[in-house]
Length: 296
Image (cartoon, rainbow, N blue to C red):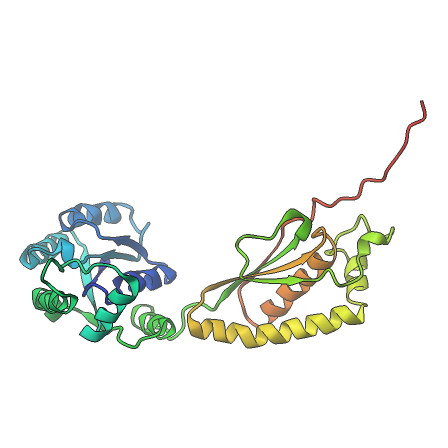
């Protein structure tokens, strides 16, 4: 087996690279002490394929002795665990700007030592490791989307990994907004099947309710505009690097209108090639119970 060693300059984007590898189904561990790496490799090997893709993030704070790290690599090779060094870097101006924006402290700064001096010191310290790197990624001016494309091409041999995954969720406003929502659409402007006695106890997953909802001109107009909006938004979300999107459709109780529209939307997006799941959060909550009286 082979473990990816993510290392490089502080502020260059090692954590972001690890996050992209996680999206590519790698098991990533951040800042593991280098002396523990052989034992970790033994545990991974013992799973006999339980962890096929593994990456470790090692930063300069753990690299006081580069020679020790190379000796550990040799020790890992002896037990049957190869390694691939991925060195992440950026130009000095970019790293300085990132530290100013985040207001974080560079690990090698100290009283009288500027961020620029710290970056130059780290460059010199990590030069032997960079020389032995199998892959070097310069994140200067690199968008998240371009980073994802580059990583996908290098590590799984594809320009694209997997498309944007979408979760469509119907809900009732009376039970509160879904906290995980990225986009929320309110369909309470449509006539409510709840007030039709033959539809009240049915749900938007049943044909009579679906037929009624989509017999409404206002519903078809809305649905057409909604699909058109998502046709525009989704490629742009993908270009920006978004991997997951939660679209929520809400009506009063989450049983009729929102359910029918959410189901139809999930079918539409699935037909466009997106991985989609559809959840009806409140479909069982708004069940009608007729009022009865008892004569004593």
